[in-house]
Image (cartoon, rainbow, N blue to C red; front, side):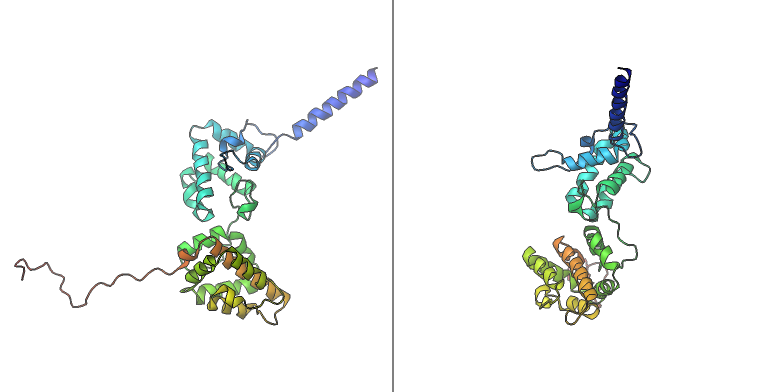
Length: 286
């Protein structure tokens, strides 16, 4: 009887221990009660919070959620920032989260936790719908500051993967150097061709026999840059991978409507005739 009772007690302890281990935690057991749905601004059709984000916040950022929930205005500010990034995309992230303050501020620390632990390299893979990617600081400026924010924000993973491949890096830098006056318009035209055309380009560029990619892309300068470093005809498997990465980055920019952001700024208006008088008008009216 005593042995049986002892066995029951040991099983109970084991079950209780297992339940404790299963509790959500950032660093060991959480010290705060947290409700991930209070912080989650990612909603499905109908307005319900997306469960994957709620679960991730509770499991990975529990203490910060609990502390922010206790601080007046913190959760509301956090949700506003999260929704702003969801609505405007990664390229607008810095502006969206600026009201949360710098690192060390509770709302910002919660956002950074969500970004690192509930984000992903590509937004569709992220439980909370935000990118966790940081663009390689060595990446050159994309045409204009606005273009750079759009592509490095929306296509961060693609850019980093391209820069990890020397052929792709050189092709991309060639495009940004030699095609800077036309890349914005070419990218917009590529996007206007539709998703099926974009997919056809990528399928062809990544194929062993790529076919006439130039006719599909529409930008001769862009194709020339890719051809120079990753030949379409007679290239190797490494060339195929590089051109796949390069045109994948270009297609990503097109799909995220970066074309208008990458167009060169219009020239300033003329100052007028060089010999025109600049004094006050003649009061006589002559």
